[in-house]
Image (cartoon, rainbow, N blue to C red; front, side):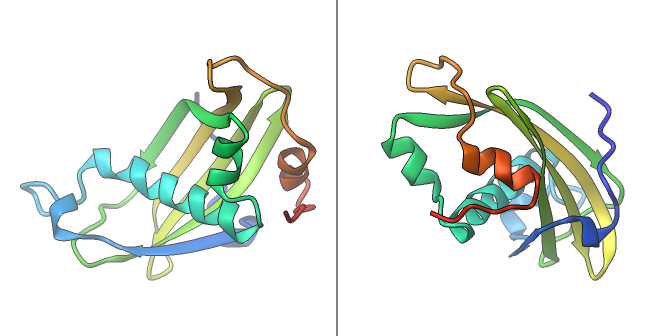
Length: 145
């Protein structure tokens, strides 16, 4: 998977900021690569909450968004105490899968581009068609709960 994630902040409909904690850095003083996935997850959860479809709503309905793929391209390191802005945009949706693009910045400097692909599944892991509100996110027609 080679993502064509946009570097233009205007292409993203949601923004979430977080601060890098010391425990997330490695011996070189930069954020360890394993910490980026929780940053993306935090932004996804906050995005869903912001549009009136909190993650717990889907879990309570017996559905989940399992991660099928993840690609992260590091452009510049993140360091302790950086305030990271995670820009998020649902990019594609079809059948039972959808894709989200991310742009991470610090002080308007691009540090990271990422993409995750998710499947909409039940508690047994069987795929289900995406609900209309998820498909609507891709068309920027946010359907609030």
